[in-house]
Image (tube, rainbow, N blue to C red; front, side, top):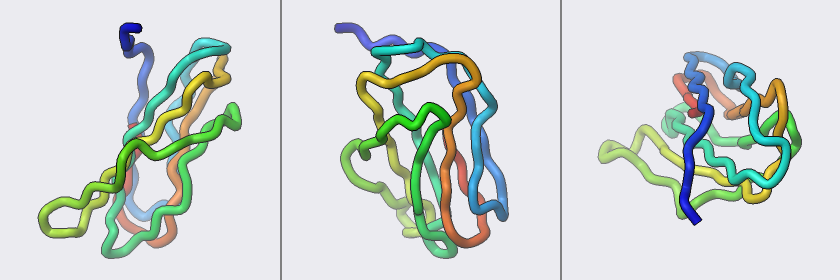
Length: 102
């Protein structure tokens, strides 16, 4: 089966506990979805990745740290996802620093 990338959104902020992407329309059933997140591990703690369609997200591999150990990177996937109109994706962390979700 070929992997096809469709619609995408990016959100980044400084000082927020929770950030969300802009709304997009995704296939209503059967899609595989993936998000990538980053956060400042020196001043934040990861809490969750979620979406507006209440899908279950699973980490892909393990967290990757930059060489200075400050920025953490993670990827999450959802197989056989529920989608539709106005679909958003949210990263929640504690603390206040720059974080992002794509």
